[in-house]
Image (tube, rainbow, N blue to C red; front, top):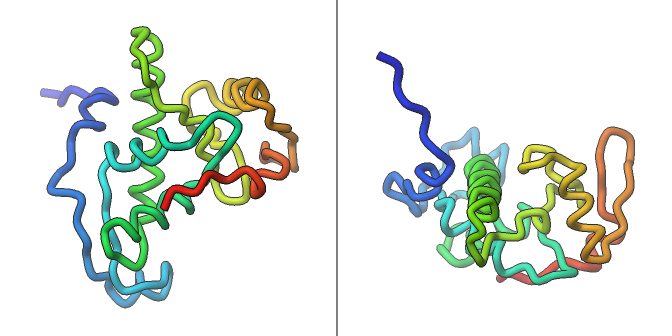
Length: 158
């Protein structure tokens, strides 16, 4: 019998014993730096994404830094933090579709270097429209779509 695929909301609600701080093995210490790593939850990542006001942006790196500081770790897991941001974005779209108030403005959370995340709901084009409506200038840089001067518009989370 095939297992039912979890909904975005179910993924958001699950925490599997997290947040937790773990010691990194030698390979990951070399790869990511630091000796301790916090593995957050979708809810914690979402809470930081919600702090970004209109006209400002943040990056996954900023969210990771805030999570690490909050939990007394040297770093936050780059893999799970990115996955949790995507889960939060999809839950926000579900909430918007249900006309729920307070949906997370996920389009304000960028990848490194100011790149729009193509994996968020609606892809680059949908986010581009939302960001432009907030006054950001968006431009293509090769295969990537970026916000110009994004680094001057970063909201401080930590």
